Image: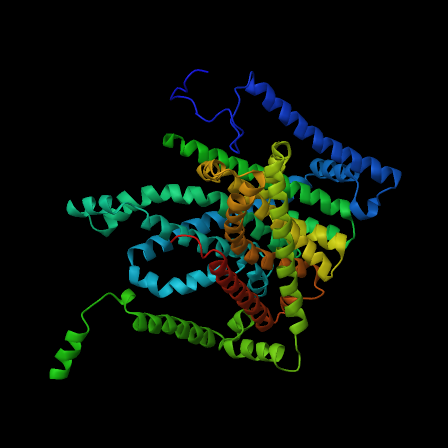
Length: 278
Length: 268
C-alpha cells in the first residue's frame, strides 16, 4: 500500500456516514434515468387511480376520476374558463404583491432610518407578523364588498408586514464601514438611502419575493373561497358546494400548476440575478 | 430651579429606544391613540358598518367568552384542529425524514415531489379535504397534518442533509456505529430543525383550520367569522379575528418556552 497522498481523503477505505460521490461514467444519463423513474411513478399512480375507479374498487364519486378531471380541464381550455379564472386570481395576486412590496419597502426604509419609531412600533409589527393575516378577508369583505379592491387590499395587507420586516433586517445588514465611509465624505440620510441602502436592499427584496409572491397567491385564493366571485378558488369551492369532486380536483390542479410555474420563474430570476455571487 | 438641573443631570439624554419605561409608555400610547381613532371613526354610520367600534367588539367578546352565547366549543374546536394537526404532521415528518436518511434511493426518487408540494400554494387543498372528510374535527386534523407534514418534512430533509460532516466523523472516530450516529448527531439536529419549522407552521396551521372553517361554515372560529361576514356584523368578524390572533400569540409563546427548555444545551 502506498502512503496516502495529501490530495485524497485519508480514511477513504473505511465506511463513512458521509457518502463519497463515486465518479459517474455519465451523470447526464443517470439524471435522465432518475427523471424517467420519477415520471413513471406519477403516471403509474394516475393510471392505477383511473383503473381502480373504473372497476369500482374505489368510489369515483368520492375520490374522483382522472379522465373526468381531464374532461373538465379540456372543456375549460376550449371555452376560455381556464384563462379567465386563472387571470382573475393571478392579476389580484400580482397587483397586490407589487403594491405591497413598494409600500413595504417605503415603510421599512422609513423605520430603518428612524430607530426611535421602529422601537415604538416593534411589538406591533411582531404581533402582526405572528398573526395569520389572511383570516382578515371577511373584514375587508364587510367593509368593501366582494370587490377586486377588497381582495387586492387583503394581498397588500398580507405582504406589507413581511416586506417591511425584511427591509428593516436588510438595512441592518448593510456594512457599517460602508455607511461611515459615505458619511465621512458628507453623505446625509437621503444620499445613504439612495446610494447604499436601496442597492443592497434590492437583493433582499428579490430574495424574499418567492416567499411573498407565494403568500400573495394564497391570499388571493382564500379571498375567492370566502366571496362568491370568480377565479380558481371560487371554482374549487363551487365543486365542494355541489359535491362535484372532479370540479374541485380540476381547479386544484390548475392552482397547483399556476403556483409551480410562478415559483420556478422566480427561482430562475433569483438564480439569474445572483449569478455574480459565483 | 435647582430641581430642574438635578433632573437634567440624573437623566443624561439617551435615545428613547434605550429608556425602557418611556419606550413602553410610548408603545402603550400608540395603542391608546389607535383605540381612540377607532372609537371616533365609528361615530359616523358609514364607518360603523365597516369597522364596528371597540365597545361593540368588546361586548361581543364578553358574550362569547363569559356571557350567554358561549362560543367555547368553537374556540376549542379550532384550537384542537391546529394543535392535533400540527402534532400529527410533525411526528410523521420526523419519522419519514429519518426514513429518507436511511434509504437514499427513496429520497432520490421522491424529493422532486416533496419540493414541488412545498412550492404549491397550500390553502388550495382546503375544499378538497372538506369534500373528502366532511366538516368535523377529523377533516381539519387531517388537512392541517398533511400540510404541516409537507412544510416540516421539506425543512427536516434539507436540514439533515446539511448536518456538518465533521460531527459524524468525530463520533465515528470515537467508534460509533450507525445507531449511535443517529442518536447523538442526527436526533439532536432533528429537534432543532423541528422547532425552527414548528414555530412557522403553527401559525400556518391556525390559518389552515380557519380557512377550512370558512368553507365548511359548520363549527369553529372560522365559522363564527364567516357568520359575522354573511350577516354584515363587523363586530363579530373583528371579535373572531381577535380570538385567532390571541391563539397565535399564545401558541407561539408556549412553543418558545418549550424550545428554550429542550435546546438548553446549545451555545449562545
